[in-house]
View 1 (spheres, each protein chain N blue to C red):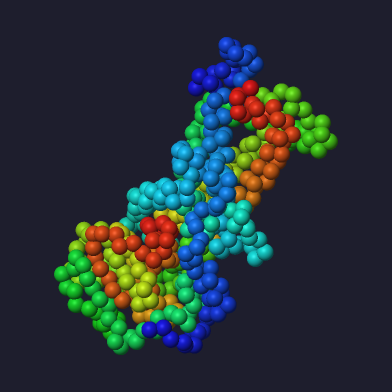
View 2 (spheres, rainbow over the protein chains, first blue to last red):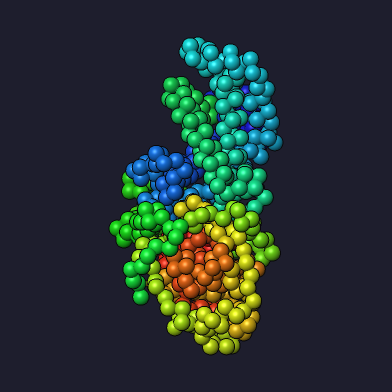
Length: 212
Length: 258
């Protein structure tokens, strides 16, 4: 919590006087999440291949994780703990510290449209990394929601009897598989944009590592 | 004994071969992707320098055993798997095994006996005709395969908990182990064995169980993944040691509850 306090007031440290953009808890949960997602998506692709939802789509095992179905399932149901425990810590702190409200809200449609056009023209500034533009807010909030959907739909596939009401909420077992797949697709699409932009604006990557 | 026979109606031979090939265990395949990515992930996951496959494999199996305990806690003896109307039954209902249907056991119902063993008072073997005289329960439930697909089927037979009481089984024992004609086996936890929807299925869709679905006896438990539902069962033992199972021993999660 002290790190978050440092986020409100520009931090005055011995070695650096730049304000902290990402408090430590954000950075730690971010990179744990990156690892968990890497394992979950890689193993999820291998699991998908055992019974593809779409005839023409399958994931070559060179880019998947686990080697075969049983291996992928072991990875998936191990990394699930990392993903969920870390995710709960992140969302709880995000709400309790007010970071989500401060950084991600409000999201106004006309601002999203304006910033989206500006982004396409290459005129969207990343000068102040501590302030998210409207497109960033929408994407970051969106990926958090996709994270909730992928965990909930995953639980409903894993436990369609013990959690049968959750499974029913997603339209039944077979439909929940599609929900789980499309939530993965949304997250992967986000990652493509997110990683590309982090590489284009390297100081944003630095901020997520050292905080400023 | 396996023998060549005609496919029962509703079994698609192409699907059958595809499924069989997919499930075929390959001794050469390893649980892990060999490569920098997995090694990197591995060293981070385990938080130590050991990055060789077998060590990580063991670590993942430890987590899998932990997941067994979590699933046992999640399991409720009163929570029922959803049941469906007749119209929801998947037709044709898929045949699925690690062998083709031609290789499936062809059992003579006249000579077949269910062997009973372990912590049971009455170890008299049961003949099919005797089992057929016991009170019948019916269910239309979803079979969920570990591969991800599912199919809704209709099974009739004897409630396993009733049968265990009838033969004087020690219901405080931890496990029930099933042996099958083709060499398949698996072990289930006693709470699942006593679940009201766990049945000794003798019929599929009110007809004598076809060879494809496990004639003469399949243990049907809608609270577990399909591979935990043994077919062509020849022996049942009540015991306190976990005897593992065909797929479980190769790395599939032991509890595999739904």
